[in-house]
View (spheres, rainbow, N blue to C red):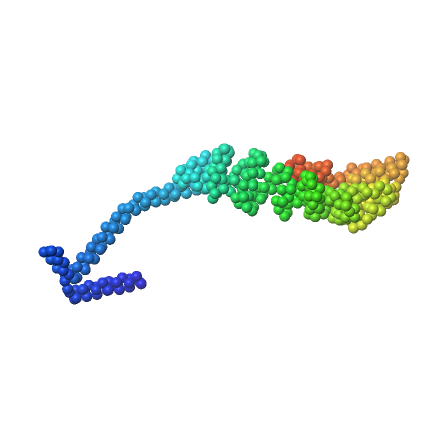
Length: 422
């Protein structure tokens, strides 16, 4: 509506101007030598307007002719871009469908139409990998890595290839370059941690471990690798702090502290026993007490916070039996049997107790036979077992020899649900 009103106003103004020129009259005279030309003012204005319009049309046509090659080039570029985008889409579909040859055909068409853009190079690399041509994929990834705008994409692909072929030196170098290209990338952090685990660089793995990772196991493994005693002690403390019930860390930390403060070392062992009693902790606790009777008292100091725990009763029964306190030992072991908490170790110790009390007699042998039958039917003793594959180990290790999982070896009784250990 507004546009129509503007046109009407413009037409009215032109019409009024034309009438004004017509009523005004007048003549425009042009004389060149003997030549004299006289033109009425309205006619002269019309001639000027017509000349302006003709000149404008000529100039516009000339400009259109000049722009025609560029327009044709732009139109061809648009067609190539549209065809290239369609080829990229078909390549993506082929990759998703798992048809490598079709993907490679479409990628070649896309690269011909669009050139070596980050998108086409990445598609070329993935199509080559799907077809099993890792060399061609590496060439595409290298081309990506040489582009400032896609360097991280190329380095990521090359890093993935290096890790697959277990070229750890190249993987370390590429990981550093990728970190410089894209600092703080979450994917790169995960890959660097996996690389550290594969190469047993436990300190690096610990630094990159997520909050829910096996930090205690990694810290202790890093401490075992550390040559500097001070840094090893810090890592052992970190392992114990991460999981006070992790017996290997508690023992290592206490052993390190014992050189400077026996009291602090015993406090660590006592805290670990209160958190998760373990036979190795008990052995470390009584190691500094050679007298058999004195060990009974020192064990009482250790187990006072959880005296009814299986490991507490077994440890007390052991030191009592060694000290000749067979009554105390029997009380602890039979309490386990009556509570149906005894494992094979308790029954075997009861058989040993019968011989200690009664010697080689018929009654002792009969009692031993009864306890040995109980041992045969009782649950086995806890062992270090991998939570991932169930493989048993004689001692704790950071990595399972059977399946290669890290931080999954835990102290567990047979039949118990494993929860991953440290």
